[in-house]
Image 1 (tube, rainbow, N blue to C red):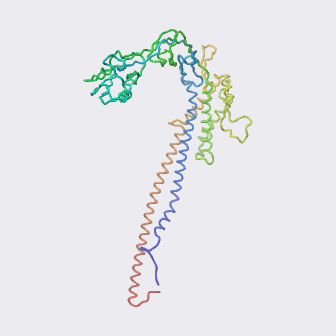
Image 2 (image 1 turned 135 degrees about the vertical axis):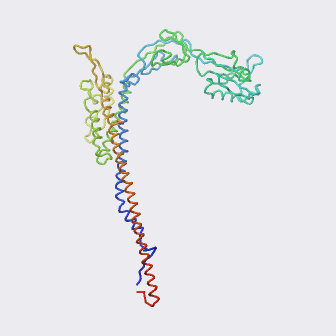
Image 3 (image 1 turned 90 degrees about the vertical axis):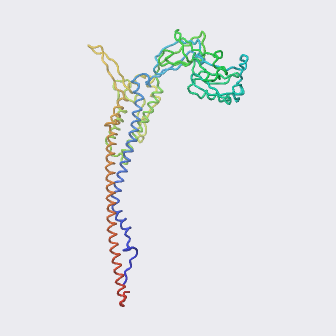
Length: 488
């Protein structure tokens, strides 16, 4: 008789048995991990959808910002046209802050920049210098030593090895000197970066005569710039620039670029405020696109197969917004709903299977409605505030809330960082995810403890079997020594 056992101890596949027993427990953790993954995906989808609704809110602000002043009014545009149609003498531009007006402008003198030149080939005897060849060193022109000079208080160092190119490069790359240098008729010209009658000061450095040698501190080589002189409605003004802002002109929101002296000619500038149908249409188009994306994404994510299925409050927000854009907004207005200005859930007579949740704009109808009554379009979208007379009083203020404010109120309640739906739901999901994470950690720790326990148990069993095998081998040896056959 023989017992065949292989390997250490029992020779049994203990490791396989341990892994098999551990795997029996693993599905419990896998289920929790799947729940955690689903919650993470839900949270991600919710944050993405929050951004989509935020885009809708931002789109409405393009309209309602008009309530806070002309600078943000997309319903009107301000333009400035001139009698100088070719722009020979000047050009004019106006911002939304400009008040409609007609101005008369003449240009007596353009602003020029101050310049200082070096001595040149035609200078007086003993001072002729020719800087035409920019590759030459200063030593080749007679300055063969170390030196320095200051332009408007900024110090520059030179030597006999400094080339004309190098000198010009150093000056032009100084942000503080306030000049630009160039070669003209064999002279190096320093030209102020600002227009007007501002001096350029050039001084010799300590123990140096470079500025004197080159001629920059000789006022005979100085040409002082001049201010622009112009008249606005007969009143003469001066400015150290040809690009006149509202400060120089005294007209809020207007800027003018002077190009040429007008002589006896008077240029008229007409500032007009007009309805801006193109900008409003573009803003509405953006709103409709963002709105459709929010509605369609919500429908997809809250559907039966969606990651946000069962989020009834989210569906409620979606439905409220959808009802707002399809319902009557201003019962007493010229335009009572979006459909009156060409925004509907589809064209009349469209196929019944077509998408009727998305808004579409009939561009022609919108343009017709806006041009017919831009104030009524504005009232529909952002409301109005007007004074109406009543008996026994001087008047009372009646305000009409527009569609965009109503949408904002719903969205701001949902998007609020304090107690809005998205914030509250995200906090709830984060809490669930954290609880699951803690539960998974505990389960994994329990599983590891279980693995260690059964490993110890199987190791003990293996040791016992190994001991039995050893005793059996000893018994066989003793029987064989006394002639007992142990082979069967």
